[in-house]
Length: 309
Image (cartoon, rainbow, N blue to C red):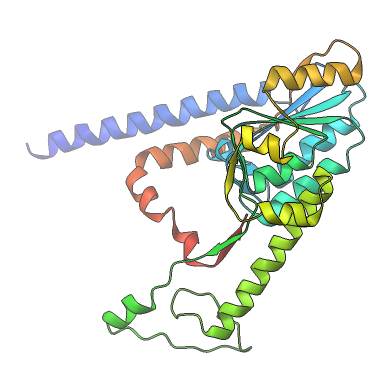
């Protein structure tokens, strides 16, 4: 008698699991039929969006829309460059920054383009987001947009005090004096702190030099602004960090004048393959089922030294 409700419960679970798999399969088939091998545009101006933290690598999976991956952005830029129907490229930026390497990669690819580029900053185009914006020919921002933040940060969680309180010992077995520098199980020595600070300062100089070149400013001018503080759009215009206040319509008008023709904007997006879709569905399902656990583990990566703009 007691096993009957349990058997019914298992039947319901199996039915729901089967329904999920079948619906995922058919949705994947639809996605496969509608996906394209390469992104394409149906206008003469390509719109590429850089939203979220800037990271290295490719953009795929359920969390893809939450980050701006350098390889994916560069692929879209190259697609726009190679498409003869595309006359100019418009960049929408809403990013607080992220990886210094990824920001530099995208900025370098931007400057290698042979077509007019314009960017407009929405809520935020700070740090690495501003680095990329400065690589375009012309920058617009809302008067209240957050820009600037020309600086570098390196951080990690350090647990040595907690381990000591719980009588846990970190045994150091390394080959190379500084091999375990920046791990969370021991505090930094003065020498290690000086080494890491030196590397951060060097990246900061790279950042300053790039902005100075991109914005036609002197290194001294940028250095005065490169304290890591943010500037609202209205301040950034006065300081020469952006060209004008405005948004998408202003960016479109700028390109219309540059091209001297009517423009049609088409957004370029990375293609979605069948495998990408299935991976996305699986990730989303797992995320929804284990949201609390996911939140608790989300900062695992922060246990290692992270350098970002």
